Amino acid sequence: MSVNELIAHDKGLDNTLDLLKEGYLFIKNRTDQYQSDLFETHLLGQKVICMTGEEAAKVFYDPERFQRNGAAPKRVQKTLFGKNGIQTMDGEAHIHRKNLFKSLTTPLHQKKLAELVLERWQASVDKWEGTKKVVLFDEAKEILCRAVCQWAGVPLPESEVKDRAEDFGAMIDAFGAVGPRHWKGRRARNRAEDWIKGIIENVRDGKIKAEEGSALYAMAFHRELDGSQMNTQMAAVELINILRPIVAISTYITFAALALHEHPECKEKLISDDNNYFEMFVQEVRRFYPFTPFLGARVRKNFIWNEYEFNDGILVLLDIYGTNHDPCIWKNPNEFHPERFKEWKGSLFDFIPQGGGDPAKTHRCPGEGITIEIMKTSLNFLINRIEFEVPEQDSSYSLVRIPTFPESGFVMTNIKRKIQTIDK
Image 1 (cartoon, helix red, strand yellow):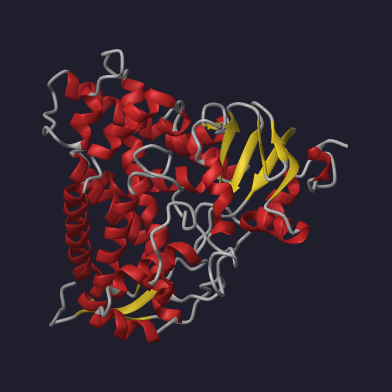
Image 2 (cartoon, rainbow, N blue to C red):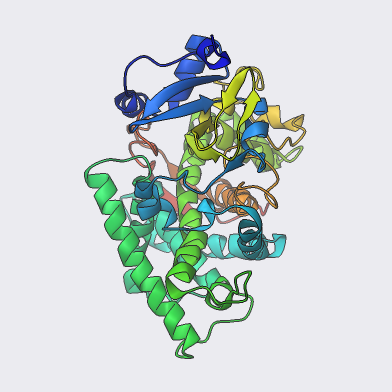
């Protein structure tokens, strides 16, 4: 008997329908059932290894063992990532491209973008005060779209904001979708790439002046390892890979508002911000609520881990949601408890809402700091800049739907600007 025959195997010839039925819990359900950190299954006609936990994350983010080239399905590249984007690269080429993204996500950039987001939130209040109800999820997408395009130097007429924000949202929504949602995401991707390609071409032709240091300038004039300029298509894909993830933070902001509503005991702690409570609250939102379900990579070379032989080329999925809810890592993982982050040591592999490992060397998202700062700024706005009521609504969210968000989008009514504000 081979070592691999000792490992748990899913029943059936293909388990894709089970994945669609179980969503975020597909991997976790099985690791719990099999009492194992990994198991074999078959998805979309191929053998797949699924694994979870801190030790699994350490292995998964070892570039000597895994590569991203060939891991992202074409359907995901045609909606979420863009064809041949940074998420599909490895080795020196990946590090070189990653350095470009890192240069645009420094603490200074984080601060500037968060300030622009706050300005946009505050500018929306006048309109909201005369509105019967506001759906936070929808508003957040437009506010983040305006702010990130202004920060990046991308021209965005006010008349186009809603459509551009919806296109970015459709790309994100298509990640785990089949049928109409997937096709909507593909159409949105095509429109966005055509739009950004035209802007890149105008920058290179001198018809649009891009400010040096902006994301638009950086992508338009980036040089590859061989010294060549990125082609227009690739430059557009990577600029969208800066813009789209910022709009995706609208999901986290909506979950943060839901957490605030469902856990009112947290509000006073946030107002006083004792022991950096804003940071803890935001991190707990990112841990507790579903965002990324899992991530994929392919085995670079044969190796054995956990008594299992990983063969070259096999697709492996790391359970992001399950690792963030792993009782071996987190005490009472299904309870919302921001104080758990008071003692958190900042491990690179136990808390992985946007990937694991060193962001300078692995595929962990370099924009994680931006996500945290925008969430803190938005939360501060909701607590200290406005007051509102939360009417009865369906605020549930499905763990089957990938990606997911509160069903109602979080409805707010009777919104008023606070006369006295507290800056955080």
